[in-house]
Each structure stands twice: as C-alpha cells, then as structure tokens.
Image 1 (cartoon, rainbow, N blue to C red):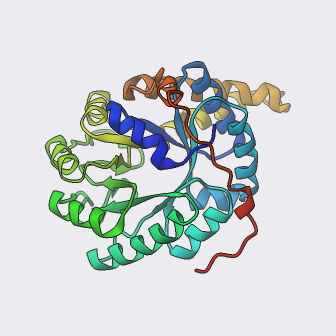
Image 2 (image 1 turned 90 degrees about the vertical axis):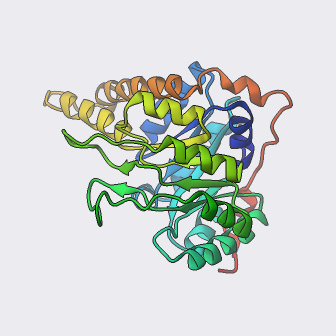
Length: 304
C-alpha cells in the first residue's frame, strides 16, 4: 500500500511512535526489508539518497512501487537529502511519494525560501515534504566542535509556519555515520520535547544508526516520528557479504545473497521493536488509507 509521507507520519504522530526510514542501496536490501516488515506488520519508509539513485537509477523506483502496491503494508518511498528544487522535481517525476529538501547549511532566510518553493511544487501533486533546520554532525567531516548546530525551538516554529513543511528534521546531537570507539553521542531530549511542543508536526531524527538504544527509544516516545537508519543496515549487510565471499567456490547469487539479507533482517527487526513500530500497520486500516498513483507524472515536465 503506497501512501504519502504525511499520511504515514500523521498516524505515528497521533499514536506516539516512530517509523524507521531505511536507506536502500540495492533491490535485495529492499526486498529483505519488505519481508521482515510484513512479518512484523510494521510500516516503514523506503529511503533513497541521491548518491544511491545515481548507482541504482530511477528504474528501481518503479520496481519498488510494484512490490509495495502488492502489499497491505503502508509504505512510502522517500527522497533523502534533496539538494535543489530541480532535483526534487526529478524525484517526483521518478515516482517518489515523499521528498526532503535539505538547505540546512544555508542562512535561515534562504532555507525558508527554497523549502517553501519545494513545498508549493510537491503539494501540488500530493507529495509530502520534509525540511531540515539545524545541522547534523558527521563522523567523516565534522566542521567546528562536534559539527552540530542545534535546532532552536522558536526558529523551528517560524520555519514550519513560513514553509508549510509536513515534517521537520532537527539537530539534537546525532551524527551521520558509525561512531568510532570512544565517541558516545548524547541526545538533547529536553530540546527535542520543547521543539515538539512548539511545532506539533512530525519530527525527524537523522543519524539514527549506532546510537544507544535507550536514547533512540526515548526519542521515539518524545516526539520523533521518523528515524533515519542507513549505516547500521549497510554495515550488517555488507559485512555478511564479505564473510560469504571468502568462500571462492560460491558464485550463484542465491547462495551468496541470503545470508546478507538475513543479517539485514535481524537489524531491521531490532529497530522496529526499538521504535515501537512493530504491529502498528493495523492502525492504517481503520479507516483505510488512501493509496496514490504517481505513474502519470513520470515523464511529464515540471517547471523548475
């Protein structure tokens, strides 16, 4: 059941749980995630970054849409960290049902202006929009200090009011990537609660891999409704592949891929339980969610 981001996150917001956004690096990863989420009756977000779509091409989106349409599970396909209005337009034409525009590194007024333009375009074709305010740190290239510019609650309210975004990614202490030994993230959960009280809309936590389970679970109970998970998935999947490929006699995909897919399923199952997503698919059946079909958009020209 393919739906939009605002439909998916509104239920999570009303019932106080978080939905994992799993970054997809290849179709086998997506298929494994679909299978375990169906078993656990858990909605999820299939998320693809521009770097990943450069590798996979937009063709994978149509295959994902077909698989999701055959499932009773509520799922969205989300464009992660869109860099420009034209890139967002391409994602919409490519079949995404939710998009993120990330202008968090720009001055506040520029961020507002570009985000609002993306919202106007996306909402016109029933696609939801995630914006970002504040900057998430990175284990690869932290800027100054810890590389994080924390989101201010009053700025968040102004940003939401002026842009009309459906969800907001905030900075409360996470970083992208796997934390090295000796580095322990610390989430500012009080700041999170103040932002939620100010804006009310679904909040998003980027850098959700490799954080302490208790903090992530508390964030999911304190106003975060979407948590991005990429590094934990990819490390489990590719480490399993490396182990299998040590056996040089193996060359058939049906012998090589299943162990990696099973390792991925273990991570996904743990995240679903941690975030309170397991069993929540039933909340989307009363009343039934409205499916959307954007196939008619593919190939059309949007003004950018």
